[in-house]
Image (spheres, rainbow, N blue to C red):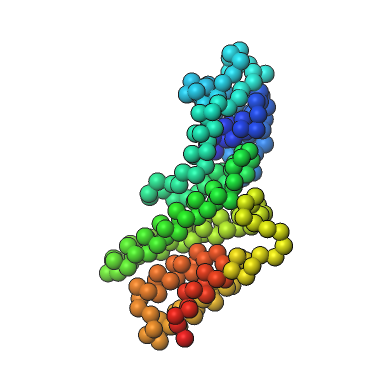
Length: 236
């Protein structure tokens, strides 16, 4: 768990005591390893020295001492929630924590945070696909590693899609009731059907290998039926 940002997210909801913060982190977020008290109080001290939180001056070791997030801490938290992983770093628990915390921070649109990370992962997946095409003669070991990375990226994208569905409608640009057809969610079965169709067109000579790989990458990360239909619109 990134204790520093978890603390900032909790304090974004208002002043809290050190004891309350420790107990809250020990109880969640779900699926994350809880920190010990020896991690929480030093983390609060570091945040205070950095000007990201402030206290009444009684000392961070006092469990009843209240802390509040500063304007600098709010900017730091907002930036971290939208910061995508550096190249070479696989999405993992840090991404899960960001989405969990984004849903708890007042004034933060968790759907916008999800989309920022989703765009990054789709672009990364496309770059990795092109790199694999350029190294088509690579040895089997490198090819296996390349495919493993692509599937990990695809899994993270699908998790973000599922997270967005679980979190429900966002506050902006979404209306109640059934969404238009092009805004409904594509299912795994929809994606698999288009993937099978694209492979058939490749076998029949209508797509080159490069075109097939590019469209397969897009199909695996497609969000709506409209996205999928566009992949075969120029094919019989």
